[in-house]
Length: 91
Image 1: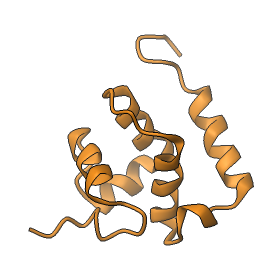
Image 2: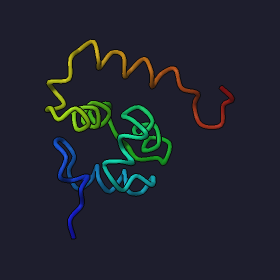
Image 3: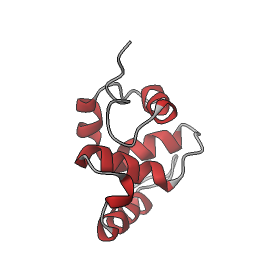
Image 4: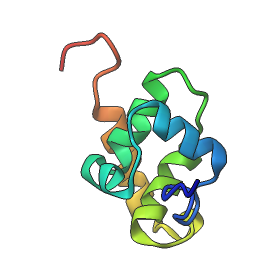
């Protein structure tokens, strides 16, 4: 079976499994949600994903290695993630 998420740069078997577990099954799903919301969904599901997954998703969407995502963009991603309410909190 071909998993289009695993065909993206930076995403391997485990990250694809985590994304599938939260309802992200295609590149279109991932693009629609964006890196921050996809990462939040994975974290909220209880998976022990590091911030590298956040950068890996962004890199996958941009077609670059996660380490080549500019520092300013990584900082913006972190700020956007931190600004989101924690599970169970009201916005």
